[in-house]
Amino acid sequence: MGAGTIQTTTPGLTVTTDPAAQFSIFKFTIQNISAAAKSATEFKVSDGSGNVITTVTPTDASGELYVALPVMAAGTYWFNATINSNPYIAKATVGTATTAGNYYQSTVKMATIGDVILSDGKFAARSSTGTKVAMIAYLGSETGEAAPCNHGLALALSDENSGNTCKWSTSKTKVHTYNTTNSNNFTSESGLQYNDATHNSDTYPAFKAAIANNSTAAPTGCSAWFLASGYQWNKMINACKNVLGTKNNYQDLRNGFNGISGASNLQSACYWSSTEYNDKRAWDLNFINGNWSDDKKDDAYTCRVRACLAF
Image (tube, rainbow, N blue to C red; front, side):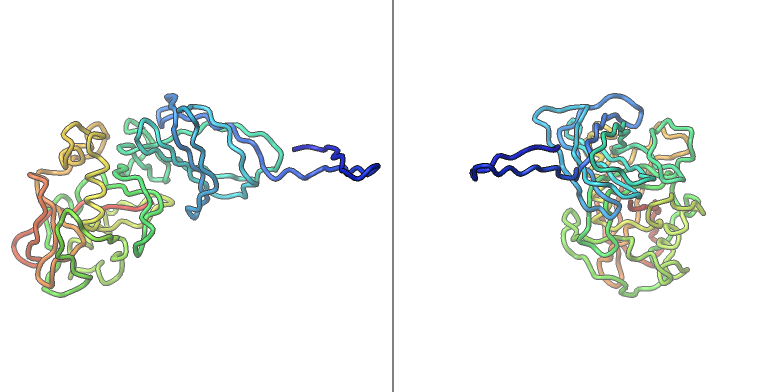
């Protein structure tokens, strides 16, 4: 809105307005992480804390969106889109605050499930030559948990502990809140909350292995490595169905690392979660058949570990 004159109902009285601009206009061009043009049916802009600034839902899917945004201070911003019913994500750093009333253009290259995270925290294509450290396995916000994820979950590119199996713990001790409900309906729980000095010890081999992730540092801007909960494993399995494969089950995640250099698929074996069944047993996921089992924490029965991170 610019300057203008308003004629009032009072004869001879006019009011001249010159309101200050409050917004800038942005033209966003949507692409996937490989720079192929994409059309979105929903597009969100959020600040670095995950607060949604605006949501755009065009009448028809569009690859070019014009969005009015308030002044954006310097910092990190997140973009979420729905493209062909699939979730996409991007982040960008604003170095200098925008100016109200200005027009800006930006190409947003968006990642999705199956793309990778580099050591510097940037999203990249699976074929990227950068230093890849994790694969995106879930996009969504889980803010109701202790140690939540604001945007998604990613898995390390290889098994921990140099591929060796290990015990969940060396003693039968209650550590967390028990989850004895049906394994297909685990209550909301984040394994990240157990990334602490207690679990990063020889008493809890599975947790220690996940936290170390074979001495691979967590990417910039992401959480530390941790052992995913049963709830988080289910989230990732469901998100990868018919995205990383065509089996529409656990196999799509298990075999979803193909084509990522330096990565190895999850094995047809059991993998620990951070979720306890009781003081003697903890939950593990069998990637032979997709079934959950509650097995002894400190017995000869051992499982593999694949580290997770939140972003």
